[in-house]
Image (tube, rainbow over all chains, first blue to last red; front, side):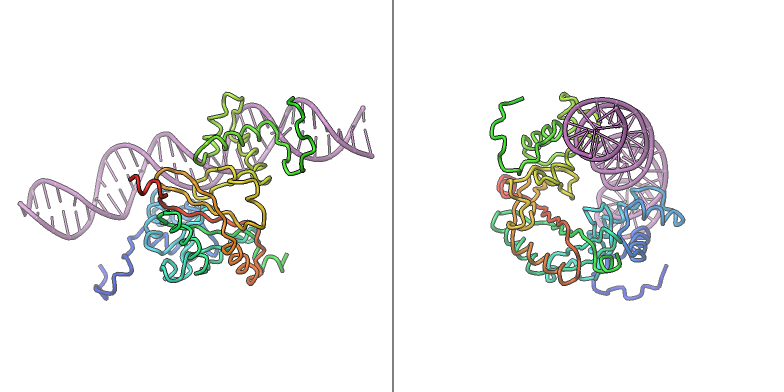
Length: 144
Length: 144
DNA sequence: ATGCGTCATGTAATAACGTAACACCGATCG
DNA sequence: CGATCGGTGTTACGTTATTACATGACGCAT
């Protein structure tokens, strides 16, 4: 199907499968992190029936740099920008509001460097870094 | 019981209850993080029978600055030092080896400052910070 | 074209992690 | 004395994640 539009492109987009696409759209459409089971519930009408279908899609999306897992929430968000897994920008960090549940993704090159540098000094082969801030966002503070 | 050794001390230790003490000793005796259910299994002979007993103790220990939760592992460790929850040293970070499971706790004041500074600039009221590095430790790299 | 890897999929069952609700006990304090 | 508070114990349940197994689609070498 489809018309072979742009078939050489740039190798960047791994051409998502149906399930991966469904999950990514769901994350994109949400204004807060979703658990795997939240996602599953929203995709029942599209034929998804088992958690594993969602977990498998999430795994690929995260590998592909299109989504993140929030460890302190056991939930998932799509990336703020396409480039947020690039080395240049540093490690992604997340500020999670305990009141409204919204998440703000940002990077700080210096933080990434310091952590990488600690790892280097210890001979620790760094694969992945999780940085999550919990607190109350500006909006909720002034509102509440 | 015991001989009232040092009974005024310094107000630092919140005088642990039996369950809290059992859980803390278990964490101290482990050379890798333990899940709540791991802890429970090790304390069956001491009379603990339900997960909640462990979770309640862990909650207090963490509040008291004697233990940490590792979010990316759903597991718990005791603090590296007594002072590791003090503001001075900065936020605790953890390097978790994917091979041997061991965890190295450290702090980097600069990292804590950068994150706090980002929070300040955003009006985000920071309550708690999670920093976890995943990778392979020196020992496992040279061994393997 | 046949057969063989490989990768995504679908399904069921279960493991692992965490919490709600309730009853009880002992200490402290008015 | 009665009230309250914090820790305890127990049952049941809710949520999150994985294991195991079977199937289907595709590319590709023989």
